[in-house]
Image: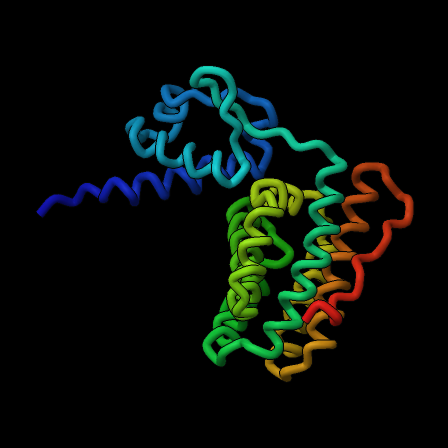
Length: 234
């Protein structure tokens, strides 16, 4: 029996490796990417590299320019603030709905992901940072799924640049990440308690803390207008 991994496994490995290099800054914003170079660096054929780059383009990590040129995506600093403001509205509502509609298995999965985050927070290595980043993504996706709102899912998909959100995670300090971990734990408690107001307030606090760090990082220390209360939208 052949021990060669299936092509999709190679594509997934390429995707994860390239994305990690972008998130860490090893591949800088605007840097040109070529299949030949990536194939050599990763020790993979061009086919899985091509699939991985296509996926990264869809997620906003990579941009395709004229011809076949691809580069690591750039994002203006003011767009980071916009992303947090949009998340403040949509994810607060998502947490509120999740507190009403989450299934026991959703809550169990949140606890499982939280345990991974706790074990890697604050991260002491690049590998731990990658694990923490992916676990954070997964945690928020579980809450969105638990909200059981296809329209909300569609809005989140259209409004948010996954690549931007993940890369922004790099600006947080150890204190920020510790506070974030506590927020995730409290979100689980609020959702498990079927307490929409509590869940919404924790998510709002979680994202406002992130927005404050972004404002400090970009030099925009002006007071941001907090996201509107979303209770009336439910």
